[in-house]
Every structure is written in structure tokens, then in C-alpha cells.
Image (spheres, rainbow, N blue to C red):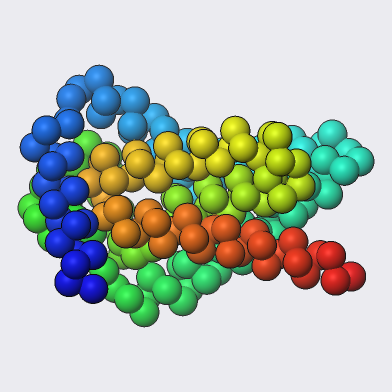
Length: 173
């Protein structure tokens, strides 16, 4: 674990010291805020549901995937691990409202990957684009200094596992 913590710390310090700019701050804030409370992902899911047919099923599976991910992330993992956010651990100034919960795993990234991978499992072509959006969402959280890289990697894994679980259960019916 020490190896991972060292990489996390070095990455956060590198971003803070070398990558920050007013322009990127604005872009990353907009990307990150789109993921607040999973709003963008629920919007995509509800749009699919409204289209009907197989798209309806894909949207419903996305919502269930988001529900599983959020429950595991926010009710089990975050309160158990209690990892302090990088901006708090290193006394760094952030350009967004200070998150009130713990850092591990990244809930924004977990939700993004739960939705994106769920869509990918339903429609590979459309899902690829959403997976790219999910990866950018994850990077925005590291860039904004509210998550370590390992938080984002774990969030992506949790989101994909949640979506995979939901899809497997739906096929068993």
C-alpha cells in the first residue's frame, strides 16, 4: 500500500505544481459539476427510458447500476475506509466547494463508470463514448485535488463491477 500512497502523493503534487491553470480549472470544474449527485447519468438514463424499446431497458439497467454503486460506495466503503481527501491531507487550495465526505473511492467516478459500463453492456458503440466521458470525469476529480488517482481507479472498478452485477442479475430472470 505504501507504494500506491507514494504514487498518489507524487501525482497530486505534480498536478498542483505543474498543471494548474485558470482555463483548466474552469473546464474541470464544469466537467466535475456535471457529475454532482449523478445528475448527468440519471439524465442519460431517463432519456433512454423515454425512447422506449431496448433503450428503455438500457436506461433502467443504468439506474439500477447507479443505485448499487451508490449504496456500496457511500454506505459501506467510504465510511469504512475514511481516507482523507488530498486537499485536506496536503493543505492545498481547491477551486470547488469542499466535499464533506471521504475520498476513497471516488463517488463521481464510480457513478460515471456504473452508468457508462452499463450502457456499454447494452450497446457497445454508444457505451464507448460514455466510457470516455467517465474517464474524463475521473481525471477531473484528481485534477481538482479532491481525489487521489487510486480513489479514481477504485471508483471506476466499483462502477464497472456494479453494472456487471446488475446486468448479470437481469439476465438470470
